[in-house]
Image (cartoon, rainbow, N blue to C red; front, side, top):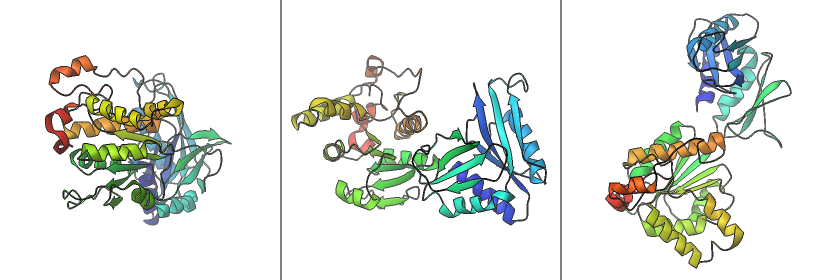
Length: 360
């Protein structure tokens, strides 16, 4: 994850005898390249990790960071990006630059945790040392820092989990993408077709099973921070998993790959079982993302992986699997590709139409 890596590099530089400053965005108004919590570390000789947005604003922050790293007092860089810096993105930013030496205890705690457990990091707006503590009631959720009590307060560590049910073509492309985005990826497959024989270095854990109870036991229970993706090799397995996971309201996100035709047939099966009855059934169906991913006309496993990753980013950052102003390709447009039909808001049903389970 980008931010813990900044902390790791800052601590290493301190241990190597270098002066280091940590810059953090504490104010972002209007159209800005980065937002609250974006960080970078800067040494006295100008080495840097992370970014607060690039361009002239970053040049000013790096210059201030070098001075603070060399022993100057902490400071806040305040700039209007258009009026002051002639940057085209617009808006204004405030960046606090803090000496890293006084924050060593916080850095050591974050680096030692390695993202395995959640922490609340507070960054004082006046440049005082960073502090960490255990999460408590009312603290912000991940990726949504807030200003409170004269500090930027944010939740770090214990990244959201992406639980991939299936280890075929799509999973092997989306898995590394999600790992690179900071998700803790858990790959699941029964291995009957040899899917688990190849290495999965991007997965934090490999579970050789499609049994939901076993998977739940191994991951310590499902949570609101879990993104569960059904992307197996077989429609029958997909349906069995969907029937068991559909009623698990504690799961934060549930998505399934497939064409419109497949999703329609699965819906009828859920109706027969009574799983769509009443208001609760309607709510559960509405939250299911199937076909999963943004409709960008994707066809190849590589393209589908990007579409899925984009949707998960939207859920993480915006709280909903949608983007304001997004105009997906509609069914009547995609139907001309000869597939079973457009995903109607998903990744592209033509993968099933063209290659079936093997394409996944």
